[in-house]
Every structure is written in structure tokens, then in C-alpha cells.
Amino acid sequence: MTQCWVVDLGCGSGLKTRVIVEAIAASMPTTLFAIDISAAALRQCAFTMSDLTAVKVTSFEGSYLPGLEALRDSRQNDAPLLALFLGSSISQFAVHEIEPFLGQVRALMRPGDAILIGADGIRSLAEMIAQYNDVLGIEAAFDKNALNVVNRTLGGNFDIAALAARAGFVFQAEWRDAKTGFADTLLYCPANNGTTDAHK
Ligand SMILES: C[S@@+](CC[C@H](N)C(=O)[O-])C[C@H]1O[C@@H](n2cnc3c(N)ncnc32)[C@H](O)[C@@H]1O
Image (cartoon, rainbow, N blue to C red; front, side, top):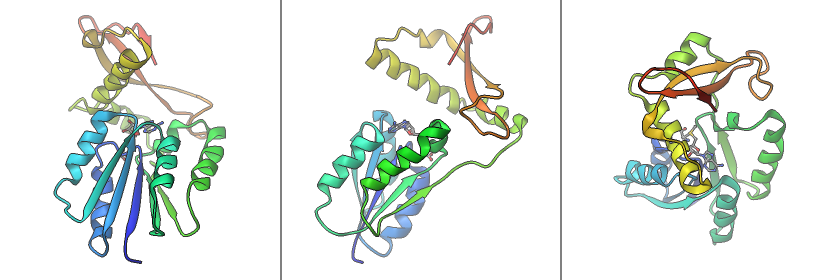
């Protein structure tokens, strides 16, 4: 094996991916094909990789499967592919959607390719709420960015500057973990009085 492709399905900042591609690139030339619907995430990921001189980074702004199709069409050699699906992104799918989705991913890969799926274990409600109400506001920024995308691309009219985020959880949500029933829900409330008036 003389070289390797890595495709990151929803790369985000690429911090976890960096650990993996850096290790692979120590033994062979590596091309990272970073897929994300967020242009900001792709920029951040490229920055995260910027000092890894043995890693060539290509970005695809769009959804997982169109990204994988583009990669399939541009793979001109028989170097193997490692697909990364990290950060519990798989939990964004409804349970009945997961198997068909992974089947579609597999159909775009070749024999000898591999996929690494990262998912969270089950945590207590207190831990979950603390994580989603993180002090640095990373989760809130992430969700506000999603609302920005809705405004920009779908004609939404969220007044994002006027919203404060507070994490909450919906129980017995059928589309989440069958044992705990957790589904994360970010409650948005006006920043001035803290009253919740909308949720996603
Ligand atoms: C939970 S974060 C995980 C980020 C990173 N993989 C990690 O482990 O830190 C999910 C990422 O997937 C992206 N994403 C969500 N839905 C997507 C889709 N349908 N196609 C491509 N990217 C998507 C989001 O923009 C976000 O950067």
C-alpha cells in the first residue's frame, strides 16, 4: 500500500480526524476528502490540517452521499479509502434510516475500503445537560449556525442575535436511544427575559 484516501463524513473542526490522518500520513501519502454542509466547518478543518504537510486536503461543501459520489468519481487509483463518521453524527438519523444510509455509503465504496463510526455511550441526564449548556457556548454557537443556514438557504427568519440558548431534553423520543429515550433539544428563548418560546 503506497497511499491512502480518508473521507470525513461531516468533518466539523477536524480535530479528531487530525489524530487519525496524522498517524496514517506518517507511513504513506494521505489525501483527506472533507465533506460538510457547513462552509465554516470546512474552513476550520482545513486550518486544523494546515501544518500536516504530508496530508493533501480537498473540501466538499454538501451532504454525505453527494460528497461520496464526487469522491468515487475522482478516485483515479486503487489506493484504499478509510471513511470516518465520527462525533456521533450517526445519531442524527432516525433508527430506521441508519441501515439504508450505511448501505448507500457501502455502495459508494470498494472492496478493501473501511469505515470507522464513532458514537457516544449512554450518559446520565445531568452529564448531558452540562455538556449541552457548556460554559464556552460551543453547542449554542453550533445550533445558532444551523439557524443561520436555515435563514440563508431556506428563507428562514430567525432573529438569531435575540435568542439565548438553553439545553433541554425530550423524553421517550422514539427516534433516539431506545433505553433512555433521550433526544437533545435546544430551547431558544429571548435573551432579555429568559422565557422559552420556541424549540427545535
Ligand atoms: C456532530 S458534528 C461532528 C463533527 C466531527 N466529525 C467531530 O467528530 O467532531 C456533525 C458535523 O456534520 C455536519 N453535517 C451534518 N449533517 C450533514 C450532512 N447531511 N452532510 C454533511 N455534513 C453534515 C455538521 O455541519 C457538523 O460539522
